[in-house]
Amino acid sequence: MSLLVVGSVAFDRIKTPFGEQDDILAGAATYFSIAASFFTEVSVVGIVGDDFTETHEAIFREREIDLTYLERVSGGKSFRWFGEYSYDFNTRTTHDTQLNVFADFKPVLAPAAAEMTHLFLGNIHPELQANVRKQSQAKIVGMDTMNFWISGTPDSLHEALKEIDLLIINDEEARQLAQEPNVIRAARKIRAMGPKRLIVKRGEYGAALFGENSYFAIPGYPQEDVVDPTGAGDTFAGGVMGYLAATNNTIEDEAALRRAMIYGSVMASFTIESFGTDRLLKLTYDEINDRFRTFKAITHFEEHLHEF
Amino acid sequence: MSLLVVGSVAFDRIKTPFGEQDDILAGAATYFSIAASFFTEVSVVGIVGDDFTETHEAIFREREIDLTYLERVSGGKSFRWFGEYSYDFNTRTTHDTQLNVFADFKPVLAPAAAEMTHLFLGNIHPELQANVRKQSQAKIVGMDTMNFWISGTPDSLHEALKEIDLLIINDEEARQLAQEPNVIRAARKIRAMGPKRLIVKRGEYGAALFGENSYFAIPGYPQEDVVDPTGAGDTFAGGVMGYLAATNNTIEDEAALRRAMIYGSVMASFTIESFGTDRLLKLTYDEINDRFRTFKAITHFEEHLHEF
Image 1: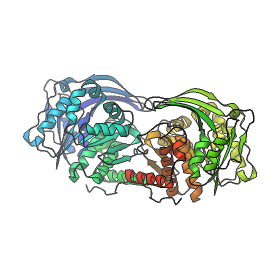
Image 2: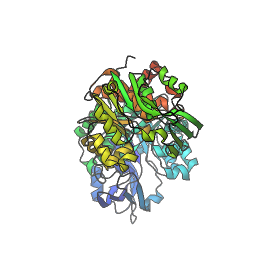
Image 3: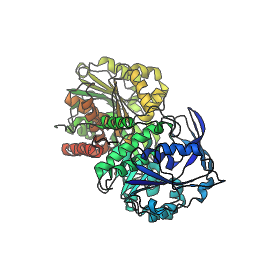
């Protein structure tokens, strides 16, 4: 199986209550591909400038991530973002966004990329997402989006949603997309727009999976060492899609999707322990499965019904 | 086993996106005792005025709730509250609070009440809570509190917390009480204040249980028919304490506490389907256990580890 991700490779400047760092290798496709690389072969479709150097390339190479389809713009600068978190990490302020070469990103899939079995459309303009989706023969297509596109380009977004297997968004986005405050109702409306499955991310509160007649929800990993939450959502998606690609299950396989969601949450729980991808890059398989076991331990209860 | 609850019996006026109702029989002890009555014998210590009539008494009698220790103040008026919910139920505005007879509530336990095996201290002045706790010989003592006491009477509250087995509060209260934004860290600090166990309620996101070396978390019941969330927290506590009293487990019994938390969540999921206690009063044992089974179904996954 093979997994392709389309999205940003960027550099972040991040300020948190614990410090500030600049020139952090980041972007959705970065977090996604590193997380997925623990499970499967993964290729990145993206665009970078000259500031993406041999050092950065080596990080991907170390994880055996394929950068064949990463476009380099000579004389250009990569996507850059500067954000700051409040003392409790509950609010994030964007100080600066420079699209740079990303402004002209028009992904076209090479034949080998189009044949990959799994595709994830990172958070980019929904017209581009729809366009890439049309070029792909993937059996499972996942997608992300954000409030900017939900309110700014709703028609394009609805078009892009039509041919999606798995939409992964947060609960605020779900409510906004469905124009419905109740998330259970919102999920039904969103699935009617196209996605066969929907995962709603809830930050520290965990995540929920919606199918035709199924519902599954997990709490967040009990993380007390939050250093930088940036990339948690993309890491989550990378874990989910990576596991699905590695195990080659269908989008109908409820048990596999539930486990995929646990692995996504496990991967995200590591990402937030450091700035950027530092913690993720040091990860071992044992650490991953240890946290999977922890998820089982903290959610298990016996179906021992009370005899009234 | 026998369960005693100390708290408000009140009348609410509630405005929600779905309508408005006045003179709703409410208050923490009302929701708590009705929920608990499905599991065990329960007695209420509270205070009411003349507006608490034979009709209201009949509601408790129907559920076999003991009102021997409910004080009636002739010529007085019961506690009254008027609140309004926003369109998405995420914010609640208090328009009016009339303490009335509740302002002079000084609960003293009769000998038989002091001997009851389980005690729940509803959200009242922490000095009163500490005072009642001293009079009781209960083997499990539960307690609630709120932001008003956390910021207003912190010394009294810390005194009251010393001899508590199970504190049940929401996540905002937990963060405020511990002065710590991370709930996992906050829980550790709160347990160090006295409570052997802590349950943090997270509204639609579920609840988490903290012990010395244990953690358990459940999502919220997937409820799409929210009519009035008032009393959900008190109903939850009533289900938890009612189950614990009925099954006579110790506060160390992790498996029993986990099931207690499921039953609390199940009971709360019914309360919010109607104004006041309407839905709760129509409940059957089969409906309760059906939702317990649903909780199992929506949280279960196999510990099938990925072979990397």
